[in-house]
Length: 232
Image (cartoon, rainbow, N blue to C red; front, side):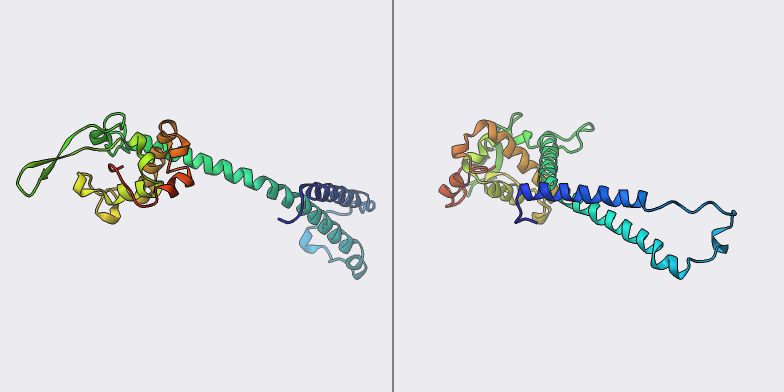
């Protein structure tokens, strides 16, 4: 099926339609129906005779077989032609829903927003960073501070995979805890996937494609030496 051209598919559909119409016409015109007889329950009626089994009943079954074959000759190519666009629409719908959930997740938890994780508490109300938070003490006992990164430009520094790893594992030395349940965090894979999809989505407006490591494979390959810069 994958090797045939679109013109051959159209020709096949036309031939199948003609075959389907011919089968239906054969069934409708194959002869007059027997005149109605006494009203006898089906279980008390005698079975078909050998002559009927060899000719009328057999022709009826063959006729319906031709109709069904013709139907599938038309239906299968139509489904095959539509499947790529249907799958693409489904994929885009799932991504749109994921981005919408991610947008809610970065906000603070509330009764109205029970998906909220609270990324805005550290990364700022617009996820542009700048909210300095205490981060323990150094070896001399001096206080340390963490500087949450600007998430609207995360794809300038990190690839999509690095953003996901950063959210999952955290960056303890920079004051960011791990969030995945695989690393004693609170979020499952779908929740983290929603966050990553939302971050990548907002970066499409703030990071040019030429330097967007989340979407541009060439930009990701140019910076493949490892994640640098602030955490996601």
